[in-house]
Image (cartoon, rainbow, N blue to C red; front, side, top):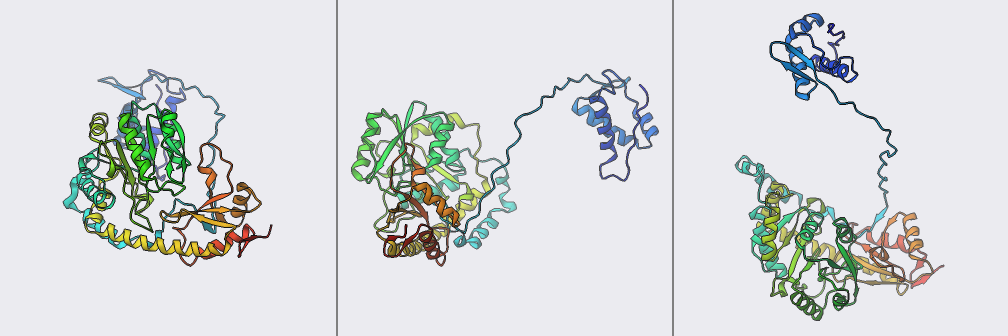
Length: 469
């Protein structure tokens, strides 16, 4: 072939060898250099374009690696055949993500108080973990999570929730979004699942993403209506018994017993999500359903999202032995999705008592905020009534005004308040009086009364329980 004609730019930030490589590659793609064409020798090309042979050698090496040319011993370099790429115009441009709105007051129920996190203590444990002595943490660990963290979780669960398990039964993962799909994969015999209605929207979405059939089971003042499991022919059930989300009800003892007997009779499983059991403000802590189970029918599921921080992305589940064996068989080639340094930092945080201290502080903080919120809403009774104030990080507002839920939500957003309606959590449409979830965790104690006053003002509710509409 004729000597390549090209002009390299020595002053460019792109190395000379890369410029040469790009030029030859484009010539091959454009079919200027046809299949079978012989390239100049490294010496000839380097002399012709006045660069070192190393530059040409690097360019040719990259072309060889990517399969544009081949090297024939004692003959030289030749262009390899290229498959023609067909171009079809795309009618599906990438849609921009919706911009996140900003609000003056954000009372969504999924938030925590980020100002109270013990950064100094966490930093200290992190520094102790990230050392050369722990270089083994750079390698992959157990698929179930590192034993040191599972031991701490097992101890914590026994003392705080009455959960009886060994560290070997615990699976650590990146929150419910990862653990629940794995769990559904293990429950191969369950064709129809029961889930609470109302309930956490992510649960419904995860079941749909896994193509698993589910039936909404109603919730009343005593929790999940267990009798419906028989009439709906449910094979396994997902519940939040200690603090039902979003209603805040507690599954009664009689229904717990009935639920456990149902699981034993049908030889199936109950998935117990204990998502925010740490925060109860009146009476004794509600024992976990797993602590009552004598027949290994309950799968316990929880996270550190509410107790520490959502961004930590550490959750865990406790599997009965028969499911644990199945898990190890199915997932033995997988790796734990939680970085090991974070696992060990959390383990140190728990082992040194800092986790328990943090929980005690947050209970006091959230209890004070709850008292402030309930006191702030009290002057607006009976137009506004509150339920679900014994636990968790939100309360439920029932509003008696001549407006629909949709109108009230729009009025709140127009006033800079982000609030979630109860009807958004139902699977089966309900005809309810307007109800809203008011999350009090993220706002400061000083701001909470202001947020309440703004909300009442935008809804035209005055003190004394009257509406100006």
